Amino acid sequence: MAEWPTRDLLAHRAATTPERTALIDADADAGDGDASVEWTYADFDRRVDRTAAALEDEGVVDDRLGVCMDTRPAFATVFFAAMRLGLTVVPLNVRETTDELAAKVERTELEAVICESETESTALELAASTDGRRLPVLSVDEPESGSDADTETDTDVQFLEATAGGDSGSPSVDPVPLERDDTQLLLFTSGTSGEPKIVRLTVGNLVASATASAFRLGVDRNDRWLCCLPMYHMGGLAPIVRSTLYGTTVVIQREFDARETARVMDEYDITGVSLVPTMCKRLLDADWEPPESLRFVLLGGAPASSELLERCLEAGVPVHPTYGMTETASQVATATPADVREHEGTVGQPLVNTDVTIIDEDGDPVPSDEPGELVVSGPTVTPGYLDSDRTDEAFGDRGLHTGDVGYRDADGRLRILNRRSDRIVTGGENVDPGEVVAILREHPAVEDAAVVGLEDPEWSERVAALVVPAADAEVESNVDSLLAHCDEHLAGFKKPKMIAFADSLPRTASGTVDREAVRDRLLEDGIDVDDR
Image (cartoon, rainbow, N blue to C red; front, side, top):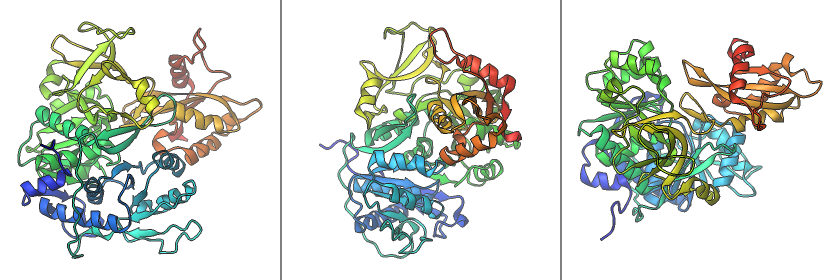
């Protein structure tokens, strides 16, 4: 007997509850090429089927499909069409620069890239940047560039019209048989080396994560999960996958806006939403009153302050702070509002079938209330990175070494003390300091630099840089040149928001950079970039 699922999750769901509402487009007038606001699972399945057939017609039938799009229903359509064909989806962060994305396209050896009107020019540049390969570009919107837009690279943009719906007939494809260990997603994360790691997530990882989450958060047949996080992150994709598995409804909002998001939650009787702490704070600052329908606010992507959690409880927000990571397809542990009220600082107990071991420097488990590194194992955990060397480094006998330090109490509730290594989490986005340092060092007036995260009430942390000018350089009087250099090579969330200068970097006795001394210097002498 074959192990479930035997084909894509939407095909299973559409055969079971075709009449139930699958998806609501909260921004239908934003232009997805379709006047429909709601799709049943039967509607969604037909649209995915046509899209899969269109991809087949374009010859996109093997290996890896890049998706360079922001949050919108067409992203969900492309995701399940890829699953139906047995393609691996590689989401690309639309906030990153073309140079950053080009390196990722090369490392993942994509077969094609799907874009939208806002990212069409970026996709064409990516196609031109590949090493001698002709990378097809397909758009879910009417192409703006025309069929001979890029004759130099022999690349044009094909309109993937099926994603927009309409009466284009009913072509169909036979869903490929799936195995639970098939790689469905390749997601990028940051490592301490400065080069993003590529995480493999399987069909089994996604199903296990959705199942474990359901046991913690509960599922009601009338649930409506609002998706307003970027779909190029696991936090934005998870509601799509989970709602399809559960047979419930996902409501898609293209972009978070405190007042608009509050309106959508009220108008569509939202029962659950995934947010990063900054989003939740903005909602509260806008005097948001959670609707009676709201069952949970899954709060992740960055640590939530005690002050924010207290505000949530006072406002009646059913807040569920969570600890998770890309490598575990989202949640590892999640606290309930009762946990938040009674056990300050906890992220709750691990989800069902997720084992967390806390070890000391020798790799031995530590007693309750004693800090150590968190090691995670279970069916949600990635089988490894695309780079086998990184897999070997990260995995041990007990599972995935997270690099995060924390402890558990006698009842198994986890508390996280430090985020892994020196990673900066700003507005839910991960920033590797080594990557920013490398860009700063490329500037001719910079000899050296150190990058740290400083506490920020809006974004949890902000990126800050202590810069050592090169000999005879006048970079201190020409900060704009340094910022312009960062603009060219770094995504906006990675750019330093505060800069200070020093004759040398403070170091410990062993010669490593003294990061606390760096922070002190920045707090004393830092120039706030936003005030310039």
